[in-house]
Length: 165
Image (cartoon, rainbow, N blue to C red; front, side, top):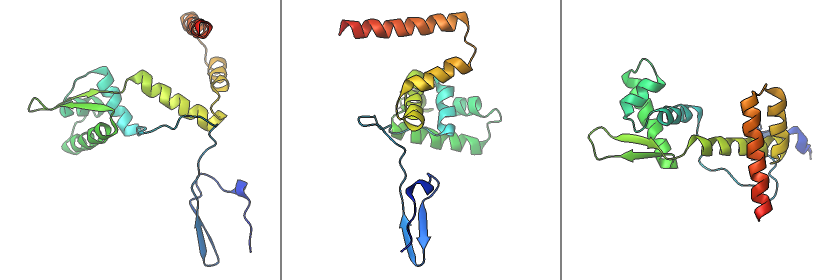
């Protein structure tokens, strides 16, 4: 019987075939105990629709299509319509059906989605630890004096909240 070392399998490995036998694997990145599981994340195409809504909402499908695709063809209109349906199913978008042309608004804020994505990245890359991720961002990016002041205020505010508990 042939043995396969576990570390040789990656997230890209779905099924492995060995002389007449196939074993399918599911890969999950390391999650520290108690880490939150993200649900209903958005695709890049859905994110483009949400960004258009964050800038101008409420909006019709036509308005969103024009914001996302500058040459708003019928095929692109249908694509945006499908993306909105998916976002509505996931709970990220609200539809107002009171008018003939339905109006759409984002239910998920930019801040909430950014937080989810950063948390997912931290879970995947650093086992859920935020400090390595934040340290890298601070070191790699040239922060303005205003950005450094805002960051200090945010950290000081978090420390004050912890002190009150």
